[in-house]
Length: 239
Length: 96
Image: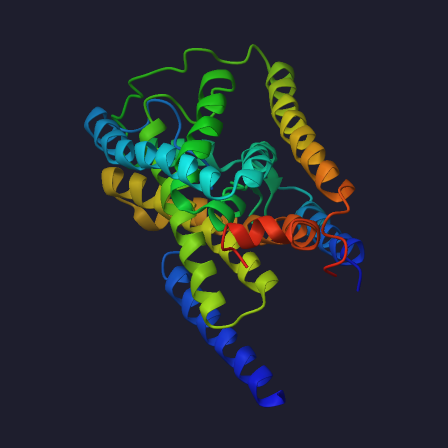
């Protein structure tokens, strides 16, 4: 019994260390502003997103059929991303950024679902807040609603396979997905402008404490779900 | 430990994470990272002209903060509503 507990801790630690190693190699915090990406890149990122968003609609329908009672959780995942991406938090390098909040939905409903929900959040901010932008919507959707959630989902599944406790897996998945979103943002800007390292220091470094905050907040929600909504989590094959 | 106790600790940690930078760096500007990225682009490519302007820009910092607060309020409202409904139902109470 004690042996298996120790194995569990070792495996969890090992997977976490490997993931952190992978990510800190490209250690990048907010959306790309309107007009700051050349036209051809805007079109390219937009085109890349289309299949994910379309697949996202089908994925939502499938999940809801599979677990009808989880519909209300879907609404909550969208709302959670809404709250978190409205919170601009101060970071240790003296600038501000905001978390993405998409990790929770990716863990519960899979990454494709978040392509749709993330797009909605980004549209709201682009249209009403002049934050992000319509021309850069494709690039921002790719980083926040596709790449981040995919990583979150993979991290969660990997850690659960390694028998990590659910809360640890949720924390790591949300935090690393958040960080990964901004690594992608930095890459998107770096490819076009050069100076990848510069964008990574602006975005990724700012994001580290925020990613941790997002990880912790996602665990807060997950703790409640685990206690009160166990049946739904099992139907969604999260637990 | 009860769920609410665990969550209280986690939330306090988040508040600490947000407050410590403010306390450690009293003179920092805390500008947006997206603004810094715009500057970096202009620095790397001095000729770059943003080719599109936001269609609707909030009229002032106040209006912008209104919209951000609204976004957070709507989101928090829905999250609270769902959590409230969930914790109210005693269907799953027996399972821990």
